[in-house]
Image (cartoon, rainbow, N blue to C red):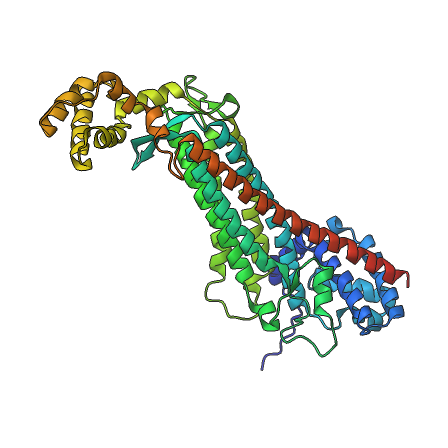
Length: 496
């Protein structure tokens, strides 16, 4: 039988796994571990599990350890498996192994890990929500300012109907509000505290899980202790919601790339967001739009990497959902923040080229649907016959290279052929019927582009954005208040 004389850790394992994890904890979790240590000690003393005098000595030594550690200088040496054991060893060195070991009573690295992950995600999600709400505010302000600004709307890559830039931006804003609502709902899964689950089944000590949740800024404990260490839906749900946000924003960005192309030209990107070719000085390259497109795709992909890692994993505590994966997921927050900030700047700066909109609208006969509608109302035709007249008129003016407004004679001929009688629509009435302004003004139904319909929608969007902002502020306040309560309780413990 071969004797295993090796000692932990294997050098390759230390280099490829333990050292990166150690550095990740330093970067992302040290402050949260300290918060958990403080809250847990306060709870142990308040419940009588640890005596007040012992608690005071532990608290004093713990502060000394935290104040004395230079995180930037710490390196993984193999002496301690991770940052948690380093802190525990430093504590024991000051007050002895017996007293120093009391801090870990009734807890495990399992419940600590998931609590740390949730605390880190809470703050990142709140910051991402704030950036998303800033974009929403910008979209709403721009939509209001561009309420009456005509554009050509496209379907299947072809000019379809006139609408307004405010109407288009409102559609994008509605999606963003739904995405932020989904993100807010996913973030609620972060607000339940795993502490007290210990390894799997809670503990035989009379802990106060509600007090722990309160001191750490959670709304309540996560109820089932097995779920505290096995459930990863707080990860998968959150990153799925983040992914959808950037998947949807990418579609808006793609439209901007199309609209700013020379052949369409209805979107003007300001010089501050345009790069000039190094060899072709006539080219205005809206490169930030390209960066937005690929960054949005990167953010979605980074979310997928986290969610897909959970596929076919066991329903138990496991490294697949822990340090390395959690740290990798933070890239989605970083990339997503870049997208939101750049898109907010772009939306605020772009404008519509009215001349190109007019030219494109006229050349593509985008108002011809309103001509058909007008014939139903004024001439008493069925919509199908009216549509036939409108189609024949559009074909004729396009063949001549005219705008639809110049085609009254073509219209009159088509009407007479289809209806078997002359039209009562005068050239002036015809021109009014096919004007883009008329098209928009007559679509004053709920959700339409007419000014009154849009104004009503703007009020709804403002209320929805305000409600999300209030919820975000409440969560931030709850955590800040918990930080204050925890600091006071820990300070009082040291003074006992």
